[in-house]
Length: 211
Image (cartoon, rainbow, N blue to C red; front, side):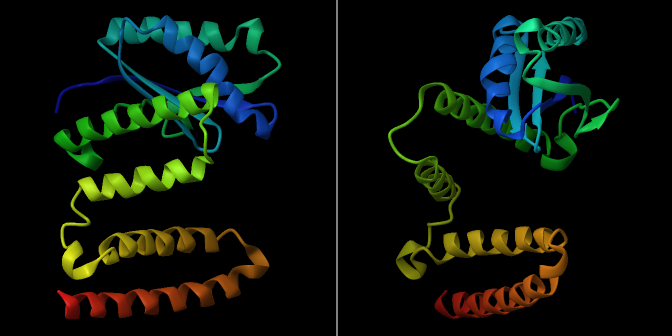
């Protein structure tokens, strides 16, 4: 496992509805300034803007961090940024060093490419716009990626069942997390969650019969 030189910064906008302006503004400006020394980069809404940049070595990382600080403290963005903090996985003061342990060495290389491509697409959409609603492109991206990863290899027997079950499984997982945040509605969400788990179990049995 080779050492990676990352800088993570979490940027909080002054207004929640201005979060995308952070990406078009200081994130874009910073990327232009470090384009010769970065290896990979991506951003996420977590829910503030989490920017990560991987640099070639420790020296370029140190210089890149100074550039980030200079850019984020610049007068051009003072009315946009409430605060920012360097860290790891959103924890101030921590160091982000990549996620090889989570994905494996080869998997992490692939994931970096995926995250960077997604960030480039997201930035393009923010800056130039697209003809159709973002939801349309998100659905096509996810469908095509699952197709390429083999979820439709049994299409003649199962149709879109494997792909549908993937989305359904993710729906259950995210619903389970969401339930914890809904206070008075928690019991209703837990009932819905139980129903969805039973339905998923039925789908699994149906898939086994069809296969």
